[in-house]
Length: 295
Length: 152
Image 1 (cartoon, chains in turn blue, brown):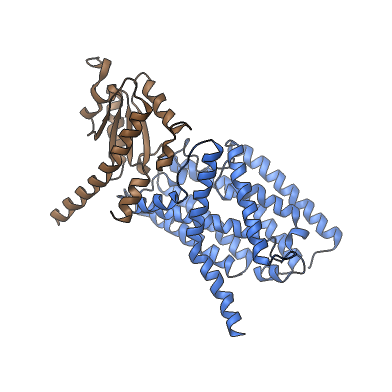
Image 2 (spheres, chains in turn red, yellow):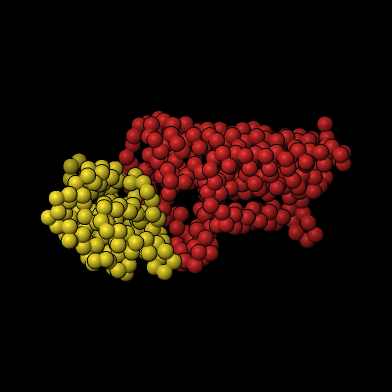
């Protein structure tokens, strides 16, 4: 009994500690696969770790202290939101804190007082405006199906979320490239265009910290998607189904990233918002019509 | 070799500066990034941002208008940094030598570490220059550290 209780804390803790390494490897694999798709040799898959290590060995050129504080706050809120998600805390709070991390990045962009930083921060804000309502409504739909905002309720629900909320999962797949900063919605980063937006003025180890935050962010996004199938299926246990769903989301990200070009902000706002909201509304109607909702 | 030095050798980020030449070397440089000579296999990432860059690739002779800009870009790069002059024009001034609008080679404006000759340069030569520059990066950092120790 005691051992089981301990395991509930030890496994999430292990995943939390390992997640920057897994996230870095995933990004490395992404770079390699992208290179192979373009018929290039590509960098080795441990390249992101080389990048971060190198950045920690470089001189930092600091513009002002404010943006460094916001950068660190961004890293800590991302880690906090991932921890809340892994330890099965309130899903609504987790989403809000993940949104807060984006706000810190926006503030970091604004406080650098450079044109590129300003532009990147504004675009980041527009991206938040696009994905945040869809994510929140998806969380509300999960609440309607499971009867509680607790993440634990998803694990205790009678059937996986995929069967009750298939269209909500589709809506989350639509906003997935925004949260992972990938094409077609890598609007705020756009390093060919506005020199990596809010991250323009960062250099040296502070840029390294932002890179580590991105590793955590990727794991958060994939884990959030994997919550849609936490039950065992046939011979596979629940965690295997979760891993499969994460892998599917990751492959989807790479394929979409390589298939599409960058969109404008207004195009993103129109397309994603309308499509996502329509999908969520259809799913709401489906839940109510089949009587699967718990008040 | 420490872990940081190994990482520094494995991940050079490059800023590409065209100072107003004939565009021939520019195209050869871009061919390096394309599938055939793919330099990203050495971990090279092309950034447009001097604050993230380790290596500056300068192409073409420096025009008088561009003098201040290139100096500004160089000052914004964090240490350790390396400058590579790509092509004859960037190395010596080339056929632009003595022109009224130019100040000739790059080393009259900023210190250059590696010269890659050729008009236009071969992509292989650029890759050779890059690999040479990677060793200089670590040497420079060691020099900086020993200077800091000497001052303290």
